[in-house]
Picture 1 (cartoon, helix red, strand yellow):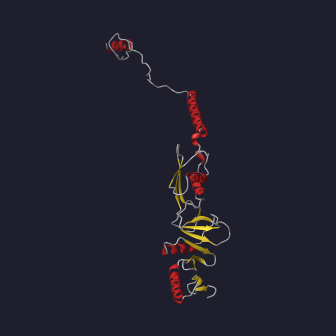
Picture 2 (tube, helix red, strand yellow):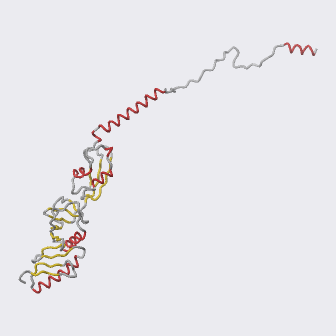
Picture 3 (cartoon, helix red, strand yellow):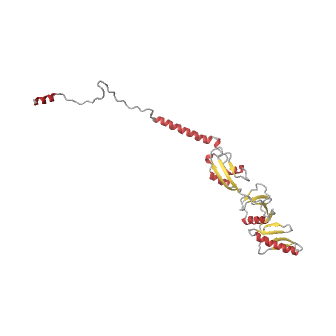
Length: 275
């Protein structure tokens, strides 16, 4: 019996386990590929078109910068002016009708400082309408120097500049140098300037002195003679010596034509003819 059972098992078909995917009689749907919503791939030609549009737009914008008159400088904004005019500063800058792209603020500053009237300047460059903005600091005049009948201003450092207006409060120095009008590219020696300012501080009512290349600074004394004091910062000492000499001469009734205190250690006076 045992052998029959073995033969029956061998003769029966092989069984394969099945997988139940749903109710009996229900068809199983086939898998569908996933659909991506809202995603589109750009082709090579699309990117080339987009890049070309960018290049064209930038080229048009660059062309506009160089063609439009608004980017060319026809005026500037200037602050800090007291004696000079805006037009004078504009002429010094050298940027008239220049494109704003080519303006170098440091070069503009150097151009402005060529003027002896300007002590310092700050330059900034921006966009229209005010593309170039400048703030200047002008030198203040301390004296009026008159040579060959031409008046010019001199600052406290001896720098020469154009006379911008009539300043009655400034001491006038009448130069006896016969070399024509003084040029603006020269500088008055500091001892002359400091000596003249000391005389002005000691005699506020004094409005005019003379300058001689040898005798220095002097003035016409109202009592009838010329007084010479040289140059430098020792004017108070020279004035004391001068006053002592004057007192002595007046006490003795001596009339003089000149008193010279250029050298305080060796002052002298010149008598009038007939004395």
